[in-house]
Image 1 (cartoon, rainbow, N blue to C red):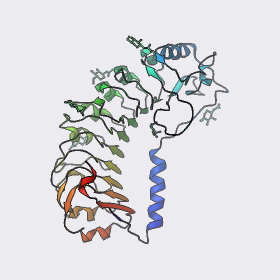
Image 2 (spheres, protein in one colour):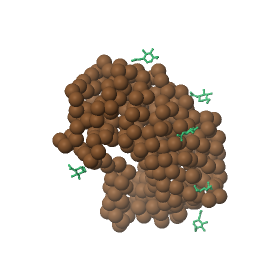
Image 3 (cartoon, rainbow, N blue to C red):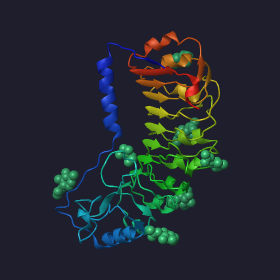
Image 4 (cartoon, protein in one colour):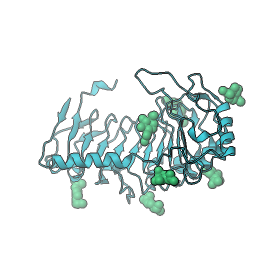
Length: 330
Ligand SMILES: *[C@@H]1O[C@H](CO)[C@@H](O)[C@H](O)[C@H]1NC(C)=O
Ligand SMILES: *[C@@H]1O[C@H](CO)[C@@H](O)[C@H](O)[C@H]1NC(C)=O
Ligand SMILES: *[C@@H]1O[C@H](CO)[C@@H](O)[C@H](O)[C@H]1NC(C)=O
Ligand SMILES: *[C@@H]1O[C@H](CO)[C@@H](O)[C@H](O)[C@H]1NC(C)=O
Ligand SMILES: *[C@@H]1O[C@H](CO)[C@@H](O)[C@H](O)[C@H]1NC(C)=O
Ligand SMILES: *[C@@H]1O[C@H](CO)[C@@H](O)[C@H](O)[C@H]1NC(C)=O
Ligand SMILES: *[C@@H]1O[C@H](CO)[C@@H](O)[C@H](O)[C@H]1NC(C)=O
């Protein structure tokens, strides 16, 4: 493996940019301390109904008792209105370290619809491996953050999620293609989305994925790694993805020439990963125009020839992984 470390006088500035990018992609939410608020009875009832559909052998929700649901673990209420605004029931199924095993399974009750002020739901790292992502989640209009990462849902992603026009963060990451979408036009209706992660989602039949994505004017981070994608258009007539900073389309099945390709027009990119895709042909000259680039991974494709000399224009570049022996993927 050749890891090219390009040093540059701007290295300090590059590092600064890196930290800034990190903190802006992390959503921040106001926590309330529950001192002033107390739980709204109908919302408490909805939460108890929701819990009764779950199996909770690791006692993740053991604190869910008593009248003030705003004090229950993972529940946050607005200190202004008293409504439940945030549901954080992340399990431990992604964690490698020690600690109690706490993983929810079972059913997701539509009683959550009685929590119409929810703007944040995180049931990641649980094991809902018998059910689909519920369609009704698309009716929680105030949602800004929905993290279903590695929650192990199965089946079709409900297109109703496209109704979540306030959503800024959507994570559908899964490990084993166990969720899929055949027609992803619903994506184009996520008009506030900034961060979209569909790593591991089976998109093998979603042929027109790029036009849908290209409608997302606010998108900053797009991860479509391991999606079984087969088409990478040569160009977008007009790229709407001017806010995009991170693009990860590694580990798909493009098997086409490295250039032309639509992503070379995204000159504002800071992170680009197109590794493990079967791209072939010469190293693309277009790289030289991507002067914002901090990290670039072109490895495990079939690129040949010289690294373009105009790569020296990339003064912010910290890491470039250019080539790796082809046998690694198998
Ligand atoms: C309500 O929460 C906000 C944000 O966390 C905080 O700034 C404000 O002081 C809180 N108001 C009261 C009355 O506690
Ligand atoms: C989930 O729903 C199914 C079908 O209605 C039922 O058989 C199962 O027992 C439920 N699981 C739990 C944990 O309640
Ligand atoms: C979403 O959930 C995954 C798994 O728990 C976690 O790694 C990731 O940081 C979460 N995203 C955010 C923005 O917190
Ligand atoms: C939500 O989306 C579905 C399918 O995309 C659509 O049929 C439905 O009318 C939408 N519902 C609302 C309330 O907007
Ligand atoms: C992906 O989905 C397609 C149909 O949508 C299916 O034929 C194929 O077997 C799935 N691939 C995997 C690895 O699950
Ligand atoms: C860019 O976005 C606008 C507004 O959402 C949309 O009308 C247009 O079709 C998009 N352009 C392309 C090339 O997809
Ligand atoms: C780099 O950008 C310039 C100006 O936009 C353009 O004329 C040129 O063709 C680009 N070079 C490559 C190799 O794409």
